[in-house]
Length: 169
Image 1 (tube, rainbow, N blue to C red):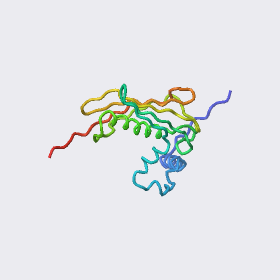
Image 2: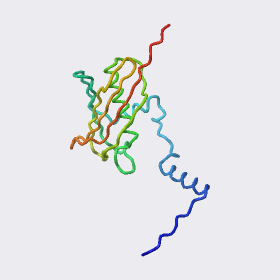
Image 3: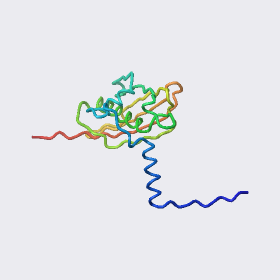
């Protein structure tokens, strides 16, 4: 049986070099495309992966749409990037909250997501948001992501939106 060599502790300088190499490998030093400098580029990016959106009012507001998992939103493992999941959950959750509360000014206060399974490149994911709780100053939504072909739950989110109070003059 071979004896394992003890691991060598990196010096602070070597640690920094390894961390910088990792960050550069992720593309942190790459220049962004010109489209990313446009106003509302983030919303346009999220809207680009969503399709066939529907809003239903009864029994409670529900917002449904489909995500096409394209190379633009995958990670190194060719699965849907966690940031894309969170961005879609925020957008679809906000649409559902607005359907319930009207066109009031609101902001995302909390978003939690459970990553249960991976959505692979070239797959489609059905997304549905519904109201969990609605109060005078808060709307809580749940968002489920299911693989279109198997209906398997792959991600689930809960978003809390706070309604801004109307300022009196």
